[in-house]
Image (tube, rainbow, N blue to C red; front, side, top):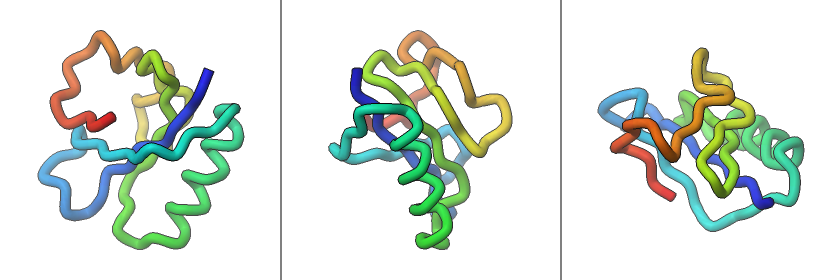
Length: 80
């Protein structure tokens, strides 16, 4: 299974808008390390999360995001 990160940045209109790219990681731990590093380097990031290819959130710095199945919930701002 592959994992990717998604971010919510200061220019986003709400906290449910997430954007990601095509970078994939073999483990959630590696994806989380990358997300934390990006969060420290890129000052526009407010929140980050790690999601798997099925939409399950494995780690996040936003309260209430972790372990939420995003593939079945109403998250209109999710870009995959």
